[in-house]
Length: 561
Image (cartoon, rainbow, N blue to C red):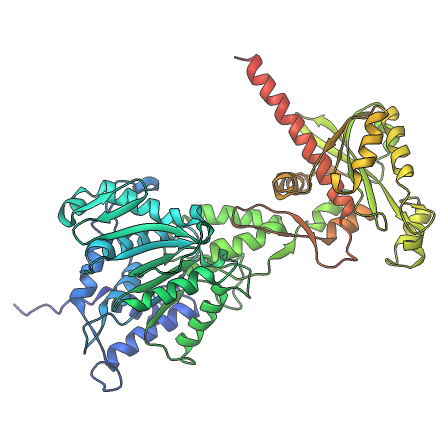
């Protein structure tokens, strides 16, 4: 019988499939694949001192696949590497310096969207280099700016170690509460962070830096990069999703990698790959989603991504988060918050605050400063077909001098319409604001007035002395994220109502928001003249309505016990 041709190496197989277009891939993945194939051809050249060692590549692939999954529906089952993961691991560990026998790559950067198991693979590499890399006294670190972030990779590695009894027995490894150690060689795997103090002095064999985009300074990366210089086969392993800080260390490393992949910069010791969509791809086009997610249909479920995309299409504030976390697109930190077409659909010119006299309401008070726009926004709640509907009415104040200076060309028109109340002089008369709120307290069932103590503490004390219920509402992310998201949802569902208020509409259009690592949002403005005080006051009032709802729900739960 004729001899069968040897199976194609998984790394080469992946690279060839990418180049042929059989695997959907962006520009950077194609360049990484081309680099690998070009390097295979360069073997034997005097100018290229590296060779492909299949045995070394097999060893890392086989090792990781002897470890168990520790999260999700596959928890407890052995890891089965996908072809793209073979490509990364085998490339990093399979290329060897033919003169020294040492690994070619010393620095790694992997950028891939959330959910593609980058932390799982990184933990496996940590366990390998701890005990299976023939390195005495190996120091393995999961490094981050905070202890909590550093522990993400560390916890996965500990769980893998606890579940992989054969690994522990064969290599003499012990998993402790805070580390994974190999006593016979004095090797250890620890989580370290800059918030615990200095990171200097480490003799690094492997440093895993998770979510590099979240690092506000370059300190951790630089210290670990310096630390790998003390060993001959050490590795700096950085993984991340995209972010928004284009002046940070992550984007710097990413930019350098793109130059290496394009051949603009030459760096034989740097391996990297970026999974994203291409320029010109539409983020909301399902055809582009698979390209950015190499674990498509494995750990990244198409129906989940479709649902998140549908939400992002309806809520502008969610678009940046969807693109960065799920398509690995670097976007600006602040994005438009409100879908203004949906906002306009909520306008009802027939609404009249007189029709709400005697009804419960909560007021939000944002005084901003004594020389600028202040807002008193009342929010009423009605139940229609068992669903909450909210109705907003605003009263806005400005020093007369601000109108005369024409800081906003619309101020004068809004004053004529009665939408804007001006007080004499160049500073706001807080007594006028106070009197209006006292009048409101008699006209409506004013449950409470939410205020930010930064400017309104004295006014709040005066209101309280006159019988009003005042509640401090600090301008923090924790206080604003949930009601901002609630307001978006209410607008999209047509359960937020306003009378076409042009001042509030202007403020809503001015709001941009930043999404942090925990998906929290907070209202911001791009320029000082783009005032957002009216919408801030509305968010405060809605936040207190949400608190009242939560309290009622909790009380009902006790009643039903």
